[in-house]
Amino acid sequence: MTEVRILAPTGMLGAGFPPETVTRGLELGADVIAVDGGSTDSGPYYLGSGTAKTAAAAVTQDLRLLLKAAASARIPLIVGSCGTSGTDSGVDWVAGIAREIMAAEGLDLRIAVIYSEQHASDLDLRRIRPLPPAGPLDPATLADCTHIVGMMGHEPIVAALEGGADVVLAGRATDTAIAAAVPLMRGLPPGPAWHAAKIVECGGQCTTNPRAGGVLATIDEHGFTIEPLDPDNTCTPQSVAAHMLYETVNPYSMREPAGTIVVSEAAYSAVDHRRVRVEGSRFEPAEQHTIKLEGARVTGYETMSFTAIRDPHILGQIDTWAALLRKMIGEWVTRALGLGDGDYEFDLRLYGYDAILDGIEPDRSPPKEVGVMLLVRAADQATATAVAKVVNPLMLHLPTPDMDYLPSLAFATSPAETERGAAYEFVLNHAVDVDSPTALFRIHRLEATDA
Amino acid sequence: MPETRTIADLAVEVRSKNAGPFWVTMEVFLRDQAGYELVSFLDAPVIARLYGVDPAGVQIFRVPALNVVKVSFPRPVSQGSLRDRDIHAGQHHVPLARLPITGLRSS
Image (tube, rainbow over all chains, first blue to last red; front, top):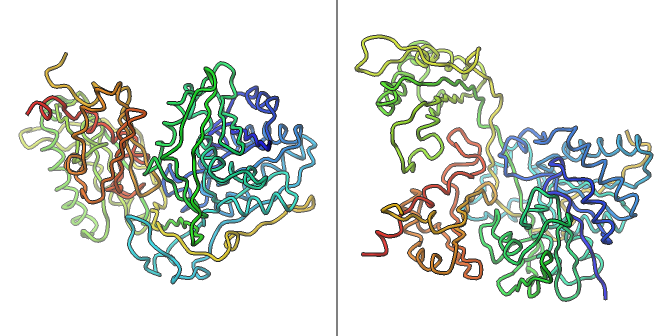
């Protein structure tokens, strides 16, 4: 009977894992190592700027262990969503790190990179559809994006492996595609392959101790079995089933480029105290193959300032104080800079009081201390900083209306203002119909001579 | 026992997170079936009032095998924008966790 064993060492390349857990996975007969290199979860900055969230040193450390493991076991290594957002710059960044490691360690592996970045002018607007809750796409939105990526399914990865790659460094890919690629390539049924891929996407997240390293999933004709790589860690039917809830809108079905994973009939049972068997997962092929697009654009430039209050008198009327500050910011900025409402925007946050939940905060009891963050956004950095500087005396000395002296509040840093650079937002929540699952993606084999 | 029991009192864990850049999702892991049945009052209008969102966008999934209720709705504030105070939406479970049970059930 055909079986494929997927080794998922960690939820994100650069997050780290105990080296012995990967050794253990090889001993258990891993057929492929699959690891995710990114996510949109940390916000639009990484896609917008084409830079990575992870530190190069941390990626290097993980990648060295994984490249050596793949070489020693002669199994493929697949990295998805390279460089956090999967831009071409992210793929090149990880490829550069991989080549340095291979040179230093004397490894001889064939690397294929898969680029997923899209040019606005190449996309066919007539074939782009909104995904809920988005509306129809304005062509100007596409043109405004600093980077657009298409989210690949398993097909480009399979094509790279069939082309002889030992290591596949993919641009933006679904979290599941990197793990599903080899079992699908070897002819295993898509239900178990995709469901197993979803369960292993975050490494040890589906175990009872997510900090103890990753997992190994064994996929066969009828289902899959999952176990933690750390012999002391456990998977339970609950811990595995619960992972279908994680970061998904719908826990029973998930869309992939080629169709939908349906797990409403899946049964989870304990094989022993630390392994779980899953059967009954289905994959419903879609009539139309679609690729999800992600794009980010610059919304302006931000400057941040942060002061803090400990005086109980002001804290006793913090809402009144904050309302006064908001009103005076408008007045002072107009007076000093001649700017009106449309020229800049600001967000005033009262950390320790209601900053996180704002309007839906259920508990407004008086706080012991409050951090006051001012975030200013304008069309250019100089304007945002000028606004923050004009507001600075208010954040230092603003009293409540009943005080007849000026308090001095506790700035956290000098200078008070921090320039945050460009700010971004995600603007695409759309999918494009494609005739071929590999059409939007460019596969390149890196030669030894490539710089 | 406090006078007003909340969802948190019945749960092992209440959590929230982004589900992609445009959705927030949260789960209540109830301790047992009795707790799971006590939160059957959770529906789209309750969530919409609690989070100030459109009830039409609220999706609720019940997973009896795990004693879980899962709630998803479009993110009210664009992720990472000027007014987004919770980039991962990881602290937005609190209003749900603090929701009282007894008052709603005894009436």
